[in-house]
Length: 454
Image 1 (cartoon, helix red, strand yellow):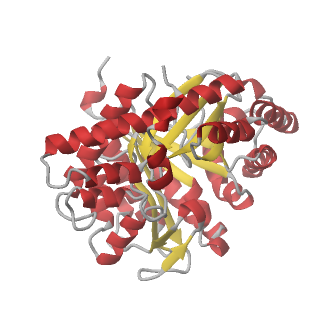
Image 2 (cartoon, helix red, strand yellow; image 1 turned 180 degrees about the horizontal axis):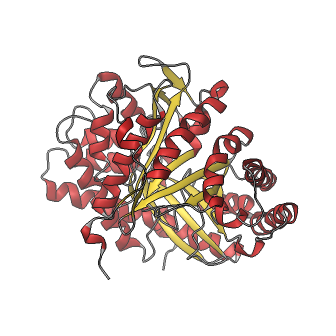
């Protein structure tokens, strides 16, 4: 049992070390809303989401007040809209109107993001899925809260290179459609390999078809807590280092478990998972890169960075699993450049490059995240970046993802300001050599041999 005394132990973590519950995410199935008439479909979607989520924000605020635990975001994830809208949508405009419906109900119930404008196309695309993907620039340019994701590969099916090629073009078009906001639409679009069904974190959250009708998933974050704990064991060996991270992750996860169970009870919605992810913010002292430096690196990106990140990620998961039987989502360490001041400092110092970040994604939670690149980067080059990251996920049987932002009108040496949780980022250089002929082959990269486990 989790009790208030256990949470009281973490008061200093909350007050001084940036411990927070990053999000309570309510997953909602929209499969029972499917209709061949577009207007009827939109009405059903609005009604179901509103009824399920009308008390989500007030419930989160009640729990935060009662236990003194900051709950930063309240969010919604829904069934991938390519599945929901397939029977009714005939044009890109039709799908974009579904995104506007999601945006409207998200504003009405007060959540900051709604995820699930998504398609799962790791082996192939239906006409509806391709139509949704092509509609993403339109949808994200017309909405404020809608987040989009596309799963283009998996260990069991390989990589859909037709989708990878298309998404390079879609990322570029999304950047153009939102250029007046420094291409912000791309910050709400993520491309996955091995996407989990129960991810509470945006922009990649969607409500998987294996989930129940409604579910509560909670994402906890505490980079500052881990860094502070490691300050007390400077110079100690790796056994002590690992044990310290693991114990700290255990305490953080227990906080998330408590919040999840309380939210589940108050909303009368089943509890799904706690996602223990060290997700940084631009705030000083809330940085994954600072943890790596505390482990002994001058900057994130220095030799040893990938090994340090591997240690951090593994121990976070081990501590989380001991604290809750239902740890899931993306649990581990995020390395988004624009949202982590330590990462930004490392880029500015020349310690961190796109290639080093790619190496780090072999062992971290997700992948290349919130990276600003020159606005004139070719669509095929973006597809090549996507393909590399998808291959890492496929071969290593892990979730990987890419959220790159080609900022139209800006180049290397410039900085872009996204604001709020999304932070700011230096424009990072991209390898200038062409991969056009490779990307234009089309088809599917087959699954690796170890995918044939039954």
